[in-house]
Image (tube, rainbow, N blue to C red; front, side, top):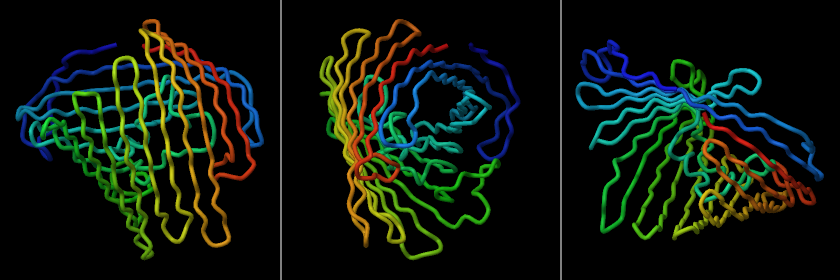
Length: 331
């Protein structure tokens, strides 16, 4: 549904003086019905049907000075209304883009897992092992500066800087950091694309702990290549955990083949919590085979996955398996 070009009086102030601008509003959504068959030694075993319903509210307009302003809010309507994502973006033309991220949406978090899949990420909703930890310090209450894309020696370059005033703490409803928070973090991303279908990129985050001298660092790097119907990718991430906690490392790879409306993919991922003191190193491994078939606004998807040494912190001997089939509708 679209509501086009409604004239509004703009607030003169923080950006630049302007009188009025045309705004486009849109509402989109998706509904997904799933059946899941789960088994293993972890505690979240369950079989049954689930329903996921989401709405996305968007608005955009152009100021008199040529800047663009857009706002997006995604709402999860499964049980009670829940704001799952919201961003305000200011496009400044050749000066780049500023984006305020109240709920997720930071550029660092956006490259936590960029590999190609037919259905979803290897780990997404399939187990409690999550190797895509890069950027989790900057999920809420952050601000991005993103350069405009530019060309260097045949490469398309995109770069960004993200700052979070209160790391691991969501911003207040006014957009300010939550009271009493004394952590902050700065993140950087760089992505290079080539017409051949090759893309490489990575990011670095340093979180400054205001109460101790032990800060935390995260780094990730990836490479993707697409040629005709085949796309494949590989990504690694590492975290130097603050306050003497267990460091962790992740490795992920996937390949997808697309023929018309049908896509099939296979992916593997691992999450390693390294030895520290009396603790031992444990590696959790995930593999998933997926398929998706799209018919207009409807997509039928399926995945079969299993995890060894599963758990939010990997536990030796834990097993988890899941088979899932889903039907989703976009509207």
